[in-house]
Length: 152
Image 1 (cartoon, rainbow, N blue to C red):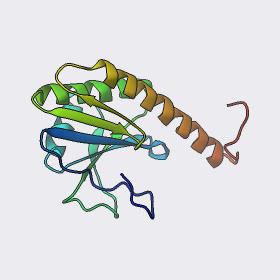
Image 2: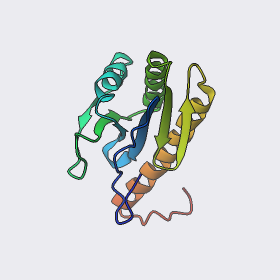
Image 3: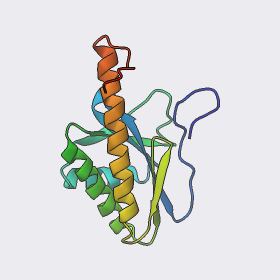
Image 4: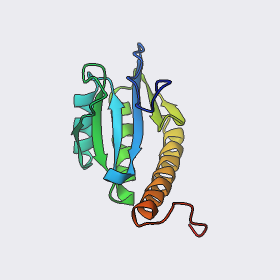
């Protein structure tokens, strides 16, 4: 969610029985940021690390840590996406009695309940594709290109 006057993601709304994870791309950092309610962050971070993800807490000046926690996950290779997907599926399995709502970049979202993982796999495939496109555009801009390269 963003406010009307800027693009800073706002805290996720609380909802009984629904766990929310927002995945925001940060390709210039080679990472994605997972935004979750503070009470979910320790468990999610532990699951990510158990699955081998390079993950740690992050902060942003515009975000109140009492309202939202941010976990940064390094996305240095294609296998990092598979690790992230596996970790989020493991997190969903640990919370089977609740619905897990995963949103990528404020545009695409999926709800996972129980063992329904097919939609999640599709979301992560789209997220990886989107992330890589933005990363390529940023690399072109940083190397002096204008990002409107017709070849790629």
